[in-house]
Image (cartoon, rainbow, N blue to C red):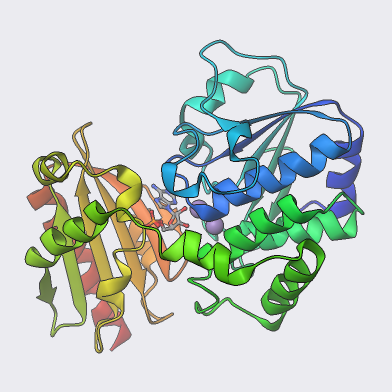
Length: 327
Ligand code: AMP
Ligand code: MN
Ligand code: MN
C-alpha cells in the first residue's frame, strides 16, 4: 500500500527549498487544514512554500489560522522543486493546480483514500487513517518538524471534520491521542474551534436543506435515502458549493438507512454524486469507482456525465445490486 517511509519524506522536505502544497477540488476541512499545517511547518524551516487549491480558501474555513496563505493557483506555471498532493485520491482531482507545478522534480502524495493509485515519487497512502491531518501529524512528530499553535489548530480542524467530530469508524485511540496532543501543544480552545466549524453556517444552508428534504426519496425497503439539487434551485437560493458539505449526514442518520446519496447537478453536464454507507459490506467506494470516482469504503464520490434523472437511475441500480449481495 504505502511505499515510502516518513524518514524518506522528511529527507525530501529538508533537502529542497521550493514547495507547492496542493489539495483536491471542492476542498473540505481535511484538505485545507492539512495543506495549511504542512505549509506552516515548512515555512518555519525557512522553506519557500505555495499553498494552492483550485477553489482557493472557502469562506467557511477562513477562520483557520493563516488561511490567507491558501490561494488559487496562478495562471502561469511557477518553478517549484517539490509538489505535494494532500488528501487527493486521484491526481486529476488536483484540478487546475496541476498546470501551475509542471516544473516539480519530485511529487509527494500523502493521502488516506483506499482508492488512491499511489501516483507520485514518494507516497504515503494510509487508508487506516481517518484523516490526512492525522498522517501529517505523524510525519511532523516523527521528523521533528515545527509544530505550534497555528499548525495544531489546522490539524485539529482537519481531523475533527474528517472524522465527523470523532464519530466515524476509523476514529481510533490513536486519533484521540493525536487530538489530545494537538490540544495540549497548541493550547487549543476546542469549544471555539467546534463553534467555528459546526455552529457558524449561513442561513442559506438551512434553506438549502429544506429544499433537499422536499426531494428526498427512499428506495429498496428504505435502506437507501437520497436527495438531489438542481442548478436552478442552487441559483434561486444563492448557495455556494461549500454550503452542502455535510448535509448528506441527515440521510445517513435515519434508522434503517444503509446508503445515503446526494445528487448535485453541475454546470458542466455532469452530476456530482456523494455517497455514504453505514455497513462495511456495502462498499460505496467500489460503487463510485464504477462511475470513475473513488474514496473510502463508507464515504465516496464520483462525477458522472448525464442528466440528473439518468444518473440517479444508473447509480440507484448499482446500489440495489450492492444491497442484494449484502443480504
Ligand atoms: P464527498 O461526498 O464529496 O464528501 O466525498 C466523499 C469522499 O470521497 C471524500 O473523501 C472524497 O475525497 C472522495 N471523493 C469524492 N469524489 C471523488 C471522486 N470523483 N474521485 C475520487 N474520490 C472522490
Ligand atoms: Mn477531503
Ligand atoms: Mn480526508
